[in-house]
Image (cartoon, rainbow, N blue to C red; front, side, top):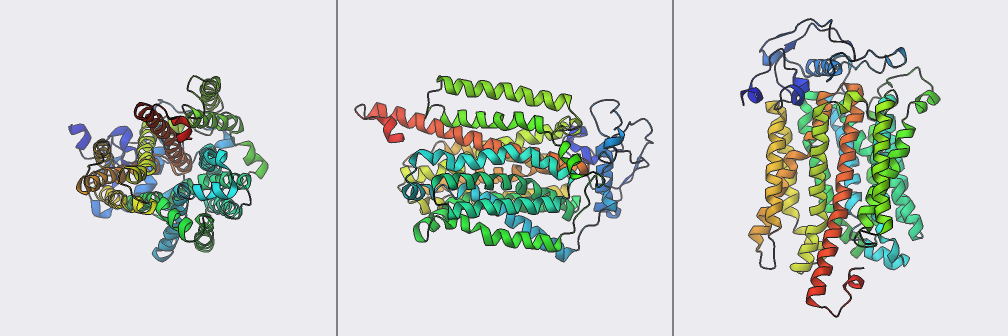
Length: 545
């Protein structure tokens, strides 16, 4: 126990908290280091460091500089191989002392613009739910319903890691702006779609843009906010994402009922334009990590072989989960083939990452860090629980409590508010005490307790229970939501942060997509079984479809 709560000594690097001392994120102590910055080089020439306890003299810039320097030398191997000349520049992290953060006024404008972009992406994932019935009536496209959500999730998941790699050798500002533009193009196409096919294409394009915006938002935050102040802003980030995810169906219902379903997508255009313009004029671009390379040389460094394995791998998994048990039986040859292809392609992707480290999407310096692995798993689980409840809790209110679509959204406000409070409080606590594990642990304790209590809902559940249980779940969700991305920013050198953050966003997308599909399968199967038992003369499969 003492190991987890002692003060940091010279042997405990605060930037590597989850690797060396599982309870620590940012210990507010001044660490005086005589270590020479060496990128990913051997540890043998390092001189011992000394530690003082003068908290007041610590500067956030110094803390981040040392975090980046020490993180870049950390490895689970005894002697990391020195980089070759071709990659020497890439392997040298940017020191925070050499990095100029914008002044406070510009910082607030940029953060507001980033949060607007995050709000749009999160809103777009769920706003479509209440618009689908009107869309299918207009397009006469009942058979295409599954693709309205899947097209977005597939491209968003598949492009997440590739775009994260692009962020590592292009200026993050310009990549982010391009991603917002792509998302806006997809949204405009969805809003103006003359047919179901055009709408699906628009959703796929918007999904590509969203993959870059979510990761880019956190990457730009690292360029705007010093590390010591970042946990609070990450709390705002998570609160914004959670709020938009829950408000989406409610806002979609209002647009669909009172205006037109097309405004569910047109609304993205003016808000996205504000974010794009603010970042374009205010945020100072950082130079790429390898300015001497041509565009052709940079493209050659993309892990195209790995992506050729990853794209169909994710597609096979999501299609199998979406079709299995509903469109086709689980023992159908098509479902078995999809799962088999998923396994083969996943093995292929892993082998590509192992044997092509120079161009690998996931570098060994990132995935060998246990804080990153733990953060990925945490993010996957939190996103899975959040999206499952966001999708199916309103269904309970509508079916059991006989609420309208709009009122069912209003009844989820307790979860929304507690999620926002949990995110902001978690960020504040992390920034003040310098530890993120307590918030993560509290979150993963409260969240399953709240979810377990929600499973006890029935037709007689009174408002005190369904409000209180949502608050418990939302508070746990908010506390845990941003700890994975925060770990990626803390334990990795600056040049590896884009890949680390993209891994977290990939797991978030994948977790939500997988467990919404699993939840839909469980829901349909349980409903069919109940209908067969209660009304044996009906054809429940036709009712479900």
